Image (cartoon, rainbow, N blue to C red; front, side, top):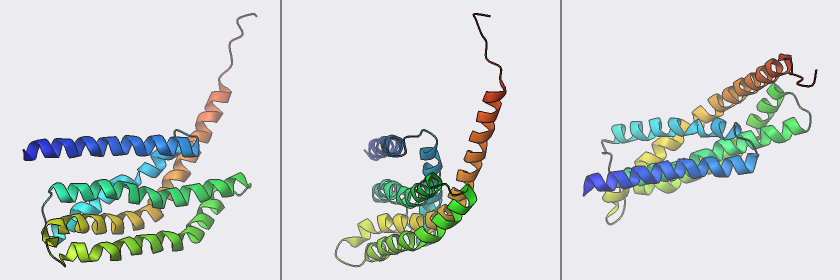
Length: 185
């Protein structure tokens, strides 16, 4: 029964990642930027596992439900950062300046929403209340994942965005250097 439950949770996790990609691709009208944003997902998994290890909790159904919740929460931070960067670039700002400005302007909302979620999950993670011991692993996974992903997202996502932009420019430059065939000549 437990194996079946873990299989169903794994299916839900895969479905969540696919749906996140589809929504992001529609929102950004790009197939590349969703990958930049979704790079923050592994950072959340690292934090969730570390949080469970530190708290001495096990990976169970509740912690896996917490990981699925974490996927949506973590992408929010990267969306705030990348969306504002794209807005600044559309206004003509150079990419590095846009990334620095987006990081500066969006730092406060990212930290505020993350801290609100961490403080909101603290009673669950601490096991306060009747029957809360069962749900504590969910709170621990969420708090650990949010802490690591927030800090790593603020550093690594802009770097990946810059790298992908440079790769796109090189690809376009290489594509423009290829002579076109003229079948009529």
